Image (cartoon, rainbow, N blue to C red):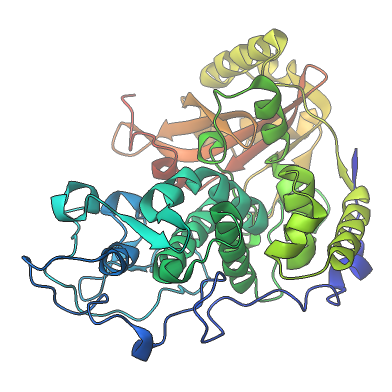
Length: 452
């Protein structure tokens, strides 16, 4: 069981972080995703026009596809630069994102390269996309797609935001595409991609602000004293859809472990750790890598990795996060069915019978949170009365029960309001977390409105 007090000494110790390799800082084209110096580009590298009838050798094919991801790989909130190589220029990456985009410099598009309406997969002349790397062959597109979901899960745990996780994976793929010609096969493709992803996440984590939950930042309020004070999106750990992180139809034991590793409380606890400790703990404790593998990935030593892991465990041991009921329990499903019925009827008597006595309600982007069944019901029946008449659609989110809440809007239709994450322990609802970000609905593949 995790305990929730932040060990400031462990979190502030940066001595074990200095060996992380910064992607893109060196001139060498290596397995950390460094950029290619202009003078080292092949004659027909991206940005150079290719004759449509010209035979492409393997390096030229790799260069062409390596700098132009197909459109279906682009985040929904990103924009493709029409003057460049299809690199993603992320200008709107979700609610209030403050991270700077890290896409490489843009260059003119070659007429023979795939475009947004002409993806790589539809081009017969680029159908053979394998590139030679000495004694082995690397199919860049295939390898990237094979690892997309697990890299997204890794980046989400590192960053605490689904939007930023997808940005990080996209940047990882861009760096991998650009560096693929220099991949020598000395490590597995998976390790190579994780190394690039780690460097990307470390770049994105620069700055003093860490994501958290409202409960981590101050005492609870009451209905009588409540003040709705919205905070910037980057303040909060954000919810993320299960299927974007792991295969929900996989081995039951593996699915159960994966769900535990993306609980909101656990992801929030990870944000207390410095970047290297965070990476080491995720690699070794969640993904079950050996210390030797993690040390090779981080270009560090086994002793340094073990030290970072020990410090990370000590910090998480001070963080309180009670185990939640499994969503596979039939009693759990019955409880959720009663919750949906009570909420959609907005029956406060029925709702209070489902709550734990010390249940918590939170509402990011507001820093407000209330504790106690009476306070939760008092809020819903008072300031939250606008949710009466809402409809809930179930979603699988952060390894636990969740719902997309549509509330009555001025158009007469039900409009997106909040993603609810429902914590259940000992057969009662202990957490009712409402992420009031209607823009999240598109990320979850939800409809823009419902009939009233």
